[in-house]
Image 1 (cartoon, rainbow, N blue to C red):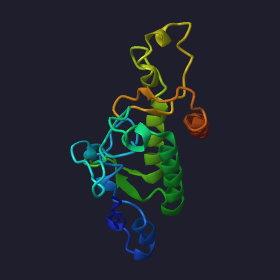
Image 2: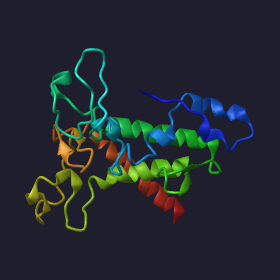
Image 3: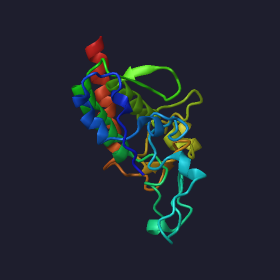
Length: 203
């Protein structure tokens, strides 16, 4: 359920700037809160619903499934019930960038919730972009989260052969579903390009 809120505008004396947030969501209860959405990236459904499933009438309950479906809802497709799905994340990042164009650098939000650290909306968008890119980057042990079920992909001859999975495990980043979903998972290339352009601009 989407919760509307205007508490993000408390630092503004001019209430006319609040109308965009009224159409949005409560950040404390959603994307900024690591207790509801994991550090990996934004999942299709909050972790809150792992222990608090939501029932629609007499139908089967809707609950957090981080990877493969555990029920036959929608034919067993779970990419909107817990995993990381690139279309949702990309549209969110794009929307945050547009919000920043309106509110500017002076508008700060605590991110993550409870950390005491504040940043502008564009920086939050950058943080979310980095989380998505990280799914494909090698960790200290040489594994990419997206490929962590394939030990051979760590070998020198194969470690650059990256698959673009349909969606990703909401807790670990493991690739799930179709392994050649370049149609939307390929959006990571746009995020990498934007990071390179930003680095070049700062240098």
